[in-house]
Image (cartoon, rainbow, N blue to C red; front, side, top):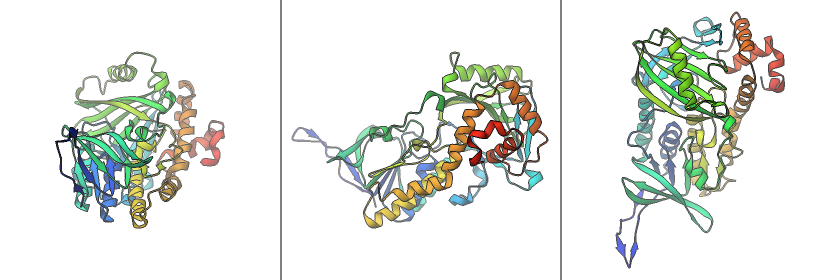
Amino acid sequence: MCEALPCGGIEDGVISVKTYNCDIVIVGAGPGGSMAAKFCAQAGLDTILIEKKAEVGAPLRCAEGVSKSWLSEVGIEPDRSWIAADMVGAVIKSPAGHEFRMDGRKTGEEIGYVLERHLFDKALARDAADAGAKIMMRTGCTGVIREGGKLVGIKANSMGEPIEIRAKCVVAADGYESQVARWAGVKTVPKMGDINSCIQYRMTNIDVEQEWCEFILGNDIAPGGYLWIFPKGNRSANVGIGIRGDRCNVPAAAKYYLDKWIAEDDRLNKGQILEVASGMVSTCPGLDSAIYDNLVLVGDAARIIDPITGGGICHACRTGMYAGKVLAECNEKNDFSKEALKPYERMWRNRMDDKIVRNWMAKEKMNSIEDKQMDEIIDILSDYDLKQLDVFGILKAIKDKFPDLVEEFADLI
């Protein structure tokens, strides 16, 4: 198992640092990091998973909505302990209030869950621990270690104590900020137009439909983004908004637009706020490369996220699983070079890259649509017999009814 060398103190005037040696060190115990840790540990690799926060999954920075279709793909069994609500469909609303309902009961499709995200993340971390991974909480990465130009580990602060973790490969699963990637020399900063500023309230005492997620569109409502309502039962819901970074035209723009919407919605304006979450979300295509010598990037650290929704839980879980499987193969060969890690790049791109690029192009096009035209689109689609209840299905419907809008990327639909 992971070996810790003794913590020295001071010898000959030099302060020694406690050093851990392992096969794989993973930075960040979100879904991507925990999945990578689980699959690495299952394959017999000595695996350390570090998390800078005091609690896995908290504080919350997530709308908590997921589809059901991908869970079995990554080996996750639904557990009622982390499911807050079970959705029958989704409602897309135009600025004028026209509705396009996607009802899974009509097609026999399963729609999705609204999670208790902190419990979901803990369940994945527990799976990693059960597989044999060592988890170190309150342990934040402070830099990377290179020797002879080669990445050989990370520096960290663990419970106030400086440490080093030396490993054959580093997995950056530290989300949007991804300091690990930048310290390793990877350019990860998106353009302002590919960033959304988000804020979300968990509200109670509100009168929204409890089995339907809502997405409200319109550049006067949420410039360059959208507003969402994800029910959580007992007259409660996550009510949030994302604003495109280059359209934040007033101070605290996301809060301004969210508060304005809530004040004007009779279902919400008598509600009370129980929790506030805020942060930034990348809405760009994935990085040109998510692998380097002795380094793998997973989830949002690699910008592998749905650009049109900002959702990234399933992408993180998939990439974490792929990383774990490929790292196990690399360990057998004792080769963690970029060349040896290429199967990871192929796996995630074959599964997700076309959709990510397509949705990024759709996002860019949607941002150019004026509210009046958005009303027309949603009004016409309200009677459309949707065959596939997801972004792809919606884009196919738009291609059918408004082909000019998707002409630039019609071959991806």
